[in-house]
Image (cartoon, rainbow, N blue to C red):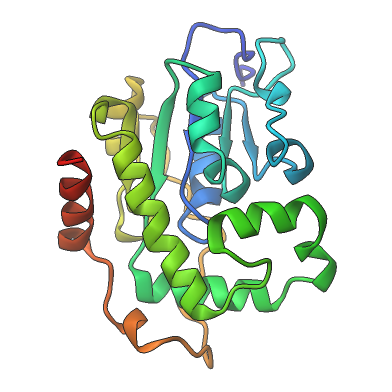
Length: 220
């Protein structure tokens, strides 16, 4: 099997800027299979401080990154690496909220300290968000991304892996051939029983609402 190209190869950097539990692990695996060197959830102690050296042009550097520590810094990454491509993974809000609350409930308390605290506060306004804060952070992130790329739609792909979107959409965006293998579907949690959530979360953030978010951003 051929080795993935180095970060200095002639291909754009790709940043997955979806939040936790939106298919970021699957996207990371897909990027590796397409030949990118992807860092999944790179260290908060570097990302929170604007140290993006792991995405440099060195041969051993990464040329892609995914998950919340990347998502929290999409504006800075866009400025630091012109010409990059950005993939916003999304998910039905109700399903996402159940999954992310369940996920955070399993994390150790120390994981909300230090630089990870800064990342979480940037995205969710708290190191240990309430369901309401999760949902508000999710919606605010979508609106912020839509507004940031409103004049550069070709640099952004919005992708819902949980509904079956995969190689066809991703490969067209990255202008690479579709591989003859199944699209990765890793780390999936379809349901988290016993997780409470606010009444607003029962209203899914579906395709029509996503279109409305991006339409508002287009209008400035």
